[in-house]
Each structure stands twice: as structure tokens, then as C-alpha cells.
Length: 436
Image (cartoon, rainbow, N blue to C red; front, top):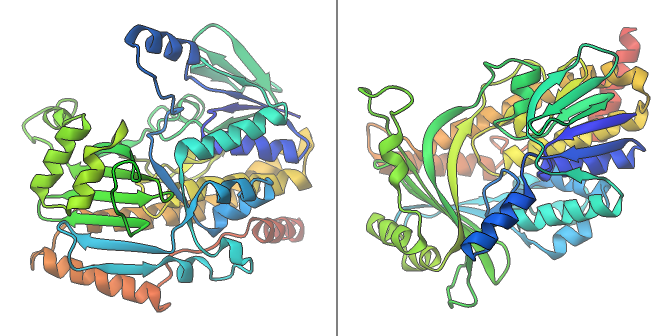
């Protein structure tokens, strides 16, 4: 079997490694052009960060995702380059009224391996480097500058056509090309596009040690609900942390949809100006200092993909944000993407032949659509809580958050469900057999 993977980001690279583990050949294609990036760096005299379609900063991985990383044989390397994120903190914008989630308690339910009990924070760029290096060692080829323009799934095999005039043909095309997936648009429906949520901002990375900045929390959110402002900090190691500055832009109802958010695209793009901005919001001094000394500033416009009814069509299947791009909360988006990878790995270990592709994809969608749809709903609910205030005032909204986190900490409400890929796939395959 030969597989084309469109998108070489975190989920795409993990997907290629999973297929390799199942004895299936795959090739990665990405629209990022490293040659053009190198030319730009030469012209400007400054390094150009290549993020493969993703914003920089930190990502969080829970037990479901760590299980997949472990099966790929990369857990030790990942843990050596990350930090456990045992608690998540919420504050009012000035750092008062702390609310704490015990992330280990909620993440470890049903997980027998103590090494996976605490979610971890890792730099996105570092995780990507680990995955891509593993792909290279496995002999998996990656072609850059390959912008997908069309998909031909009319014959016995599927062909991906790229903007440079080249093409690739395989038995299966996997779209791992993010929330603005060309694979989804070209192979499924051009109307299946992600929608801008109105939330935008910037992400920066900061060297805590170099600037003597103290950061006690591994994961913290500072919220001003009335003004729809949010600052988040993520401690990856004792030295490195990430900071996100976000705000909700209310569109001008008199403007066209295309122009409605344009006035809000002028947020300051430099760390010093962003630091001045959030200082005016009233954030604690150490948070302001993080932004002031941040480097590698990346834009962050938040989109949300409407729920899909299926993740496969013909010989094309979607994984990660291409299938269920969701607003970022608690790492649910990346966790869901790696659950997709783990599910397909288990299915292909059982059914590695071309003749079984349609069975694999049918079971995959049956398992993943409800799980990822639920994760997206939880992400939306949490995001709404960040950017909305009760008619009784934001103090009441913060009190509601406190009650909700109390419920999570005391098992009254589930915060996170571990998706056990081998168990789920085994049950689904057995159910298929019984139905036949």
C-alpha cells in the first residue's frame, strides 16, 4: 500500500510514523517552501521561522496523546524535552481570584502508567522536530513547496495535483493539512470551511532565565471578561515559556463580512508594544515582563470548523484539524488529532491490505466523529466562558468557573476522557464481525 499525506505538521508527521510502524509506505507533502523561506532570510538578514502552518508556542498533551507517542517509541525523548503540567490556573486579569484544576487527577482516570498521569507542556517546534527527525530516520520522504490544488479520486487509485505542476498517486490520501485543509475543500466540499471566531492575538516565546522572570504556574489564564481580553502563560521548562495575548474583536455590523474585522488587525505586532498593551489591561508584572522580552512573535487568529458528519470520502480521509479543527482549549485539538493517528494505526495493524481500505475508513469515522465532535463542543463551551460575562457581572462568571472546576476536581463532571485506541478499535472490529 502507498499513502499520500498532505501536511507535514505534528499530526501529519505522526501519521507517517504510524503507517511505517504498520509496514505501510507513505510520503509527506507540504505547501511550505523551505527554499523560499531561505531566500527571505537571506534578503532580510534575519532568521525565518518555519512553522509548517502552525503558530509558535507551547502545546499540551494529555494521556490519550501520550499513549500514541509511547507506541511510536518517542515518549522518553518527548518527556526529556517537556515539563509536567500538573495544575491549570485561572485568574482575573490582575492575577487575583485564583481557580485551580488538578490536571493529574482528571488526566489519570483509567491510565495505569504513572508516567502518563500528568499532561505535559512542550514547545510545538520541539515536538515537530522530534517527529520529523524520526520520519527521516525511518526513511519517510518529505516534499516541500507542494500546494494541493486538486484531487482526482475517480479511478482505482487517488491522485493529488500540486500548484507546481507535479502530482502524486497512491492507494490512499490522508489530509493532515490543518484547519484550512485544501484536502477537505478539494476532495469533500468547497463549502466545508473554517469560520473565524473573532478571537485574534499573538504568541511569543520567552527565555525566563535570561531575564530573571519568575513563573510559578505551568499553565495559567488571566481573563477580563467584560472587555474580552485574555493572556495565557505556559511554562515549558525552567528556562523557556510561551505567552499568548488574545482579544475578541466585535465586528462592525455596518461593514461587509470581508471588512468587518479589518480594524482589529492592527494589534501591535512587537513584544514591547504588546507588553504596553497588556500592562494597560492590568496583568501582573511578571506576565508583562514575559511579553516584553518575548521573541518569535507569531500571529494567532482563532478559527472553528463546523462539525463534519464523516471524516472519509472515497479513498480520502481527514485527520487532526483538517477533520475537526476546534478552538484551542486544554490541548483537546492536538490530543484529538493524535487519537486519530492512534486509531488508524490500530486499524492498519489489523488490515494492512489495499482491499481493506474502505473498511478501515468506515470504522475510523464511526469511532472518531462522535469523540472529536464532543471534544470540539467542550472546547467551544470553555472558550465561550472566557469571552462572555454574566448579566450579574464578571465576578459572578468567575464564580461559575470556580464551581465548574470544583466539579471537575471532585469527579462530578468529566473534564477529559481517555480514548484508548487499541480497546476502542478492537470493540469496533468485533462489532463489525458480529454485524456480518
